[in-house]
Structures are given as C-alpha cells and as structure tokens.
Length: 246
Image 1 (cartoon, helix red, strand yellow):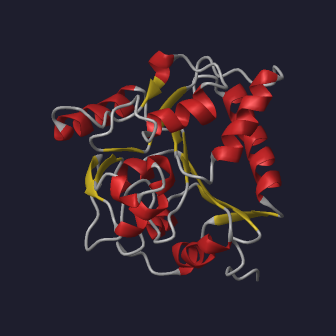
Image 2 (tube, rainbow, N blue to C red):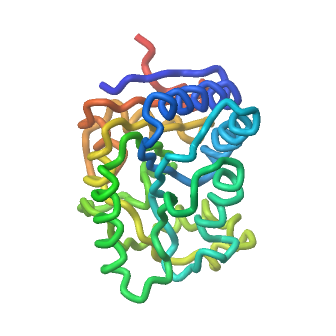
Image 3 (cartoon, helix red, strand yellow):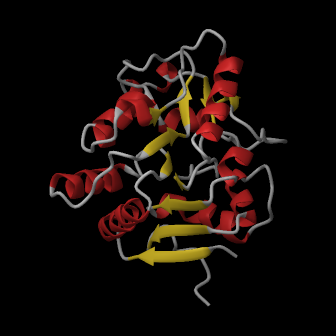
C-alpha cells in the first residue's frame, strides 16, 4: 500500500509540494528530477518559479529528464512538451539548458534516440525524484494500458483518449495530435529512488483507487507503482474521493 497524502485543494497541494521539492534541492543541490507534463503539474511549476523569483530556491545544479515527447514534433513547435516545459517551468527557474533533457521527437532514428536517453539517465546517476501525473485510463508517461508494457524508453502508439486529452496543445483538434510518442518505460520510472504521483480532480478518482488498491496489471500501468519502495500518492480531496480512509 503506497503512502497517501491528501490536501484540501489543488492550490494547497501545489504550494506544499513546491516547498518539499525546494527542500529536496537544498539537501541535494545536484538532484536529478524526472518531470511530467499535462495540466496537473502546471500550478506546481508556477509555485516553483515563484519561490525562485523570491530568492527561496536555487536550481542551478539541478538536472531534469522529462517523461515523454510526441513523435514527429520538433522542440520549437508550440504543441511540443519542450515548449510546454519552457513556458511553465524552465523560463521561471535557473536550470542551465545543458542540464535539461527531453526526448527528441524528430530524431532521425527513434530507437537510437530511446537508447541515447536511457544512457543519459544512467550517466546522470539515475533519477533521484520522479514526479508523475496519471491519465484517466491509468497511463503514466505515455505507457498506455496494453497486453504488455515496455520496460525501457520506447516508441508508443497513443490511445484515442490520450490524444483527446492533449488536443489543447494542437489547436483544440485531436486529429492534429500525433498518433505516436516516445516515452520512458515502466522499468525506467520504477528505478527512480523516490516517486511522487500527483493527481487532482474528480476525473482521476477512479483510476487512483485502482492504481492504489487494484491488482497490478498492464491494463492499469500506474498499478505497477505499488511495487516501489518509496512511492507516495499526492492528491487533492477530489482525486482521493474513492479511496478508503480507514
């Protein structure tokens, strides 16, 4: 059973978690962070930026690795996760560009790019703290529900529901969302020394309950987080609404 921390709302969650991350950076200035995209971490990223602006946080020695990127989308495309991260976090803090790592969606050889990424994570000493969001179908990163899951960074075919949830990045039209992506695999994620899965909103409640208490199954990729020795669910009341509080 993973540790569960429940906050009254998304704002309190983001502010408290930002303070915890800043403390982790203070304790280990060269910490290696795994970062997600999506709606859920936006408020957290803005809180980190605000703390940096107030002189309360120094990220100059931090190294980051993002979970995933769309295949065929260049970094400068407004729908890329590189652009998302630049807008919401990297432009607000002082992480040097050389210490920011994302998968290259337009790499000429996607398989070679996945291998390169795995080696870069290993060369950095592995992930100290992996932040995760969760899709309404239980995916983390772009590890979609399937008959089997890939352990290492890999190329993945996106589910229609995942493309729909990313439509806002592509002019609101899910037909414009790429059908494939590159993503860290489940084994790569589970090798992180500590994992925090953040979920907010009632739409995440059912998958959080299944991820925390259901069987470990490839049909619910987040359920594999039950195997991790230092994993915490960080939830607001709405996302925790289906969890037993006993």
